[in-house]
Length: 131
Image 1: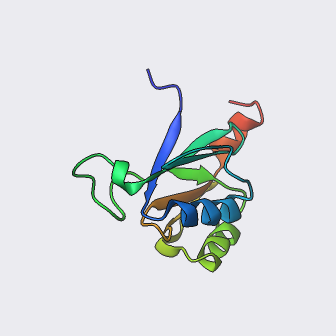
Image 2: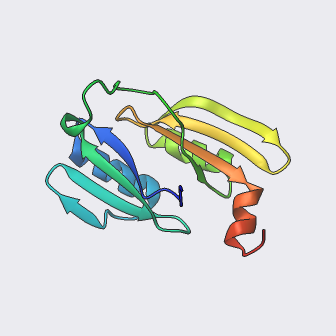
């Protein structure tokens, strides 16, 4: 049974640059670091975002945008998207209204990873203790 994300993994050719970029983008410093790997805890549930040196990626893993998009909850999609673009991300999916209370967008970070953002009214209900 899935209970929620444990660690979301990204890859980077330049781990030092990724550490700096994500510290700036997230507004927090990495809380854990070993050679070839850093980790941030972010958000309401302190979800772990791990970034590893790309040489440790599984064999056959495609570099660049691919696979699923994890959408991180944000309060203002347009404002967050603008900030990520200012930091050097590139738009992958523009701001898209998905229905009342649901707005998404996604960028590719400077290291080739997809970072989705979303305003989600259901997320807010859960965080605020309502179902």
